[in-house]
Image (cartoon, one colour):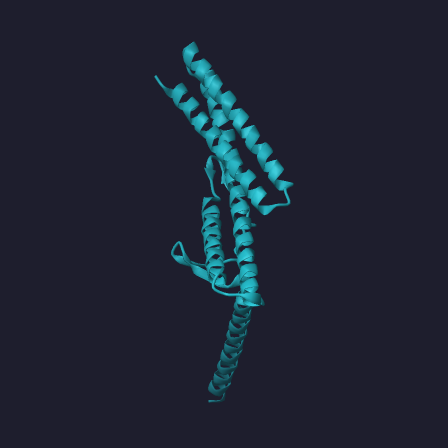
Length: 222
């Protein structure tokens, strides 16, 4: 009988410890969640639902772009940043529209907040562009390697070979110009100028990749 009572006591004590640990864990998790969601300014409020889910404007793009062989990840991260940028831009437009109906300090406050949202939107677009730049560079390097292998192994006539070399030369030039634009954007102090240069770099990168694709198709053509 005493043994049973002793066992029951131990089980009750163990259960108490488990419940205490779970409660502590729950409180800790709740505190962490509250810390993540709390903010002294309106700049980290949850924005309108974009892309099927609520997007906070403090989303970070710090995680690296993972690359394995020719398979490139980073597209989903870039997509999320662009969705977030659009949500921030929407908030900026909404606040400016509201400010147009106000006056005095209230109007100034709304316009100031709108500018913060607009700047954050540009920052997200800049980060997204940086990810795209990395993706394009990896694709460019991979395509260049493929073209060199095809040239050395494929039997193509001189006309197609000449056209291929012209395409690859133009592709190299466009990619170099894209690199120069990105370098120039890094030293720019203006957010709008930084984004403008990166957007031009993206155009150059996409043209370079398109030219490489044409060169590969030309070499594969029977």
